[in-house]
Amino acid sequence: MNDKTKQKIEFDRQFLKVGERYAVGVDEVGRGPLAGPVVCCAVIIDLFSEDFLDGVDDSKKVSEKKRELLFDQLRDSVVDYCICEISPEKIDEINILEATKLCMKNCVEGLKKPFDVVLIDAMNIDIHTRKEIIVKGDAQSYAIGSASIIAKVYRDRLMVNHDKIYPEYSFAKNKGYGTKDHINAIKEIGSCPIHRKTFIKNFTAK
Image (cartoon, rainbow, N blue to C red; front, side, top):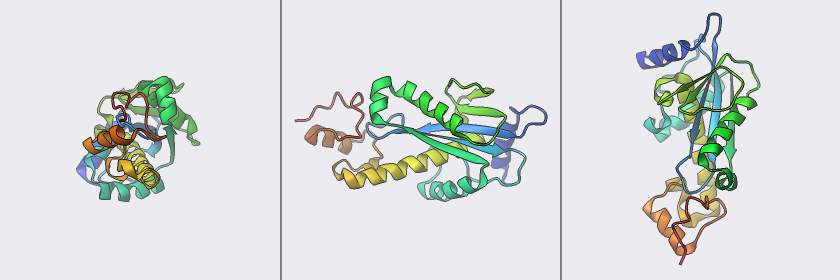
C-alpha cells in the first residue's frame, strides 16, 4: 500500500467512532450527459482490513485501462456494493439533481451488510444513517473513490452497449456527453429513446 492510499484510508477513518470500522462511500457518474441514465454506486469498505488497492482515486483521474482493472478488483475486495441507475425518463420528470439524490439513496438502501457511517461526494441525501458530506470526496476518500470507479466503468459499459443499438450518436466514444459530433447528430436526425429530453430541447431536429 503506497503513501497516497494510506492517506485516503486515514482520511476515511477520521469519520469513524471508537469501535467502528465500516464506512460506505457513495458517488455518482453521468449528471452532465445528454443521454443515458445517471448511475450511482455505494460500497462498504472495512477501513481496518489489509485488502486495499493502490490507484483508487476520482474516476476522472484514472485511465480507462486502470479503471477497468480496478473495477473487478474492487468488487472482489469490498465488503458489499450496490449499483443503481435512474432512467432518462425519470431524470426528465424530476430533474437531474433530484434524480441523483434518489439514485444515491437507493444505493445506500440496497446494501445488504451493516455499516457505521456513509461518506457522500458533495451531495446531501435523505437517509436515516449517520452521514458526512465531503466536497471533492472522490479525490480524498478511498471509499468514495472506489464507488466513483465502479459507477464510471458500469455506466461506460452501458453506453457502449447503447452504441450498438443507436450507432448514429457515437455513444461508445462520447458516453452520452454533449460533444460537437453528438449534438450535430441530434440536430440532423433528432433524438433517440435514451436521450434526456430536457437536456436537448435547444437542439431541434431539421
